[in-house]
Length: 287
Length: 325
Image 1 (cartoon, rainbow over the protein chains, first blue to last red):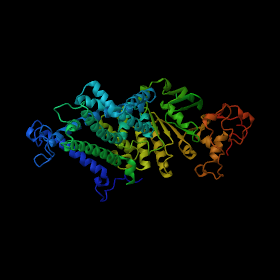
Image 2 (cartoon, rainbow over the protein chains, first blue to last red; image 1 turned 180 degrees about the vertical axis):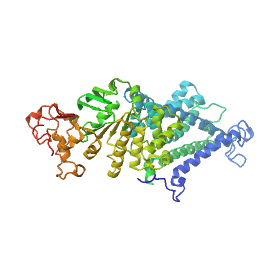
Image 3 (tube, rainbow over the protein chains, first blue to last red; image 1 turned 135 degrees about the horizontal axis):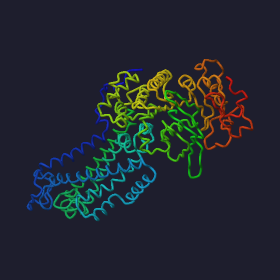
Image 4 (tube, helix red, strand yellow; image 1 turned 30 degrees about the vertical axis):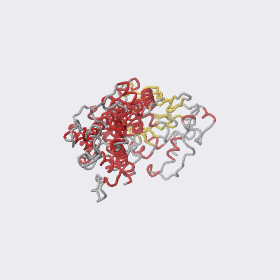
């Protein structure tokens, strides 16, 4: 027998990030957005409530980098605080979907039979409604507000994670080490948590990133419709809604929040793609 | 009483439109410190028989008969009681060491798991016991191996780890399903010697499933030959190798490279393949490939006693039965 093979010291190669351009770009955008949100907790260029009617609807200038809104508030400050809101909704909605959905998916894969059937029909039921529409319905039923927006988007995320976790878990259940774990006397819950979950975690992480992007978009849509974040808290979606009236006088007021949403969602999607490439074991084997 | 006693075990696959006979009326026993081999081609029901002992048959399979382990009928136990038995008093070793280990957990963790589960050992105690086990299965540098992941080990090393996991709780019965099939011959030898040593050391029973007659001849005390889901012959190993009674056993021996058996006869392949379980009917299942088959073989032959511990199921045992090939 040979001695234990150890991973050899890695030869000089390109830095990891550069081999995954989408991961680098997506990561950079996500970092900027998160950084903006975190910074706004302690500092913004202007106070949120600092209205200044003499400076309303000012185009971007050195004084106000992104201009001012109809109340003379600094747009950059609004966007920074709005980022807090978007990210909070995204995180909570993804956590709701991930925790409940993954648990349901693992259960369905482990128990099969009628449990599997019930979980999957529930998923079909939720999927029957378009994402944003079901969020709008739920938010309308529960009443507008940030909390309910989180809940509505989170509920929509549950079947997404349930399906992905179930599919991946089923393929892990077919593997011999799971049978080995069963012959070692482990129950199905223990096997699901100790053996199946670690082997599907990469897929779940990638889905979480992509769901996060969708959640940010859904939050913007809900707020745009007045079902999400309520005034006076700023939100990207509502900024877009309020700026409509001034489209001819101050187009930047619509363009800037719109671009922010687009770039953020794009960045998160790129991050998800990059993570998938990074975590895909088949691709790593080829390198 | 023997450690494991299987009586009239039958396994059927029941689907909406059909019912397939997979294992039929299998009876055998494994005593303490005894190595019993199960021999047969792929698809003869060897692995199913083993899994039925652990209560781990795939869904949709109906089992009947009696499986008594240490006097307890396993078929009457509930899932919880079976879980307490599996890995604790009955250990199982798999064919593929490449896939029988979880790729994302360290070797030490995986060996410690059954100890923590069944013996309620703490983290540190389980780890030091795992290290002791790795020493016992003669893995070089056991301390480093504890923190290694399966992909960092060779095939032989991984199979040793699988054995260590199965032995962790000192089971009374060990079931090894083709434990060396995936390994190269030099490593096969080491692993088998190790298994037999460990069984002798702990006085546990070993049910060794294999299709390799060489392995069978060298390691087992008794052999069951299975064909088409039923036992066609059972005998002490030496008697079986020297004077096989059933035409199938004889054909198997003739199809084996003879060096392992110390003779220079010609290799004779068995014509045809194992019939699929869906084609099982009342007759002798080997008759389609048997050179001695007659019209009588359309009826199922009973297992007949041939001598101490020797049985075989064939109508034509008298015609050339009991002689060397």
